[in-house]
Image (cartoon, rainbow, N blue to C red; front, side):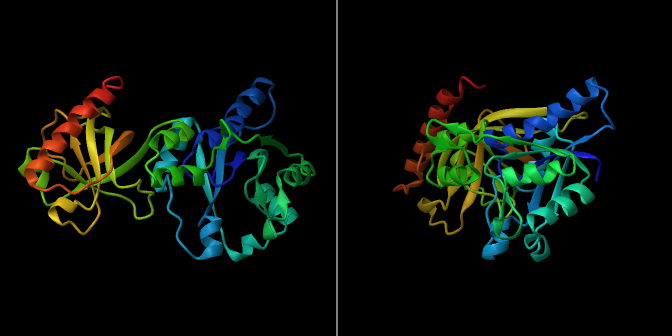
Length: 311
């Protein structure tokens, strides 16, 4: 771990607009203090917990918007140097607010500056709030900034609200709260190749087990992947994605399949980053494969129209 830290503290699942407001102060703090010639170089750090406290207390897995490397990559894109995951154990859960500040923030993290949302809670039985954190940290000469909650209209932006929106197919709300398209990052694996026989070959994706999967249906998407050529270039294609059980062919297992528009080539084993831009329709069962083929053709036409402005 790089020390000393300037830290944003919280769960940060999804890295939505509210999370970015909490992170922003740690990105500008080093600049401001270097201009003043103050102290050692500090490291912008996001501090989170593993497992999520909800998982720890309920014993049930909590699907995540940004699992593993997805969260790390997005944080690096924002300018954060490191993500530190504190093991959320019974010992950590039982720390008093004062002990949490002394043990974790002062001794382990050597924090010089901390940013939290104004609704932040910590310590045994969540007895500590953001104002208490600021008071306790001040005793160690650590400045704490409390960031107001972000809203869209009257709706508070939260990871829970985004998960709920995705479950009902409200992609527009989810993307507005995220401040970017919701994305699925997965590896292309062998499928049944039904799409190929219909004239619409698809890439069958496998995703992290704990990734939040939006409601079943058809989406207009933008797909990026690393180029097979030398260098670090990427390729971008528009496409249509289906999430569902494929009821027309009596499918029993949910699959995630992407048809790339105007693409030909082998995708097996490649990693795709699929951004969900528009929800087209719910999954449905068709009377024949010809009817299904016609609907896929219609989906592609509608997707081209909706995606024309982002090509």
